[in-house]
Amino acid sequence: MSDAPSERGSDGPRVDPSRPLEGRAPLVDWLYAQSQSGRWGLSRDGFSAALERSAKKRCGSGSVTLHQLEEFLSALHLEDLALACACAEGCEAAWEHFFASYRPYLRAAAAAILRRNSSSAEACELADSLFADLYGLADGQGSARSLFRYFHGRSSLKTWLRAVLAQRHIDAIRAGRRFEELGEDDAHDPGEKLQSGPQLHPRDPHRDRYLALFGRALSAALAQLEPRERDRLRLYYTEEKTLAEIGRALGEHESSVSRHLDRVRRDLRGAVETILLRGFGAENGFAAQAGLSDPEITLCFEYCAEDAPIDLEKLLPRTKPQGPPARKRP
Image 1 (cartoon, rainbow, N blue to C red):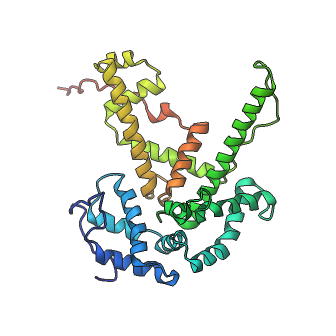
Image 2 (spheres, rainbow, N blue to C red; image 1 turned 90 degrees about the vertical axis):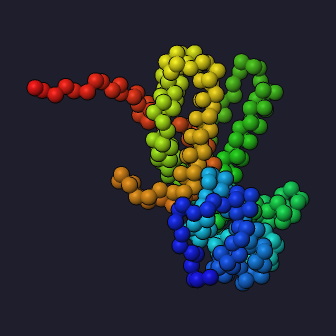
Image 3 (cartoon, rainbow, N blue to C red; image 1 turned 180 degrees about the vertical axis):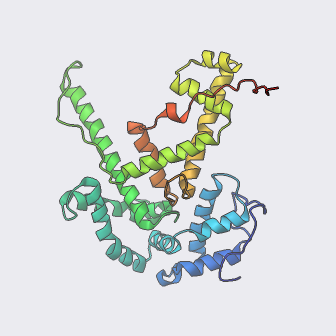
C-alpha cells in the first residue's frame, strides 16, 4: 500500500454496512500506523474495532462507496481515536497521558459552560464527574461501558468532551427542575405555585454556533425535498392546516397525508444529521465548517427544541403558481 489511501471514483462498489472493513486490511494497516497506537500498546485488532464502529456509523447515514469510506476514515482524528480506544481498554500509559493533558482542559471547559472560575468547586465537580463514565465505573460494568466507546473520531477529542460536558450540564439542570416540581406538588396546593426566583438555563458558550449550524443544515435539507413535500410541511406547520384540509389541497386521503408527513419528517431529520455530520463548504457568504460529532449534533437538536429560533415561514414559502407562458408579440 502507498503512503495514502487509494484514489477511486465515487461510482465504485458499495460498502457492506454490516462489515464495512472486510477486505480492507491494507487500509486498516495504514490507518493504524498513522494513529500511532503503538505508543499506548494498543493492538491493531483493538484499533480496528474502533474504526469499524466509526465506519458503521458513517454507513448508517446512507449508501457509501469504498472511495467515500476511505476518505471518511482518513479524515478521522486518528491519534485522538487511538488514545480514546486505549483508555477504554484500560491502558495505564494512555490514562496517565489523558489525565495529565485533558483534566485542565475539562475544568476550563466546565468553567466556560458554568461561567465560573476554572478553580471553582462547581467547575471541578462537573469536569471530574466525567471521569467515572469515561473509565466505565459509573454502572459497575468496567471498561466495556466506557464513555470513550462512543467517541468515533469525527471531531477532535477536546470538541467531543466539551459537547459531552455541556449535555451533562443540561441533564443536571433538567433533573433539578423535575425534583423541584415534585417537591412543589407535595408541599403546596395544586393552585399554588412556588416562586423560586429566575429560571436557570444552560450557558453553553457554543449554543449560538450550534443553533446557526442547525438552521443552515435544515435550510439545505429542505432545499433537497420535492416541491410537493415542502408544500406538505408548509401546510401542516406554517399554515396549521388539518390533515383533512391538507388531503383536499393535495388530492390525498387523510391517512395518506399522515403517513407521508411521518416519512418526510424522518427523512428530513436524517438529512439534517447527515449534513451536520459531513460539515459545510464555504458558500453564500458562509465560512466552511467541519462536521460535528454525535454529542454536538444532539445538542443542535436539543437547543433548537428549547427555543426554536427557526423561521419556518421563511424556510417554507408558498410555491408560486406558474402562469401561462407569455405570448410573443406579432
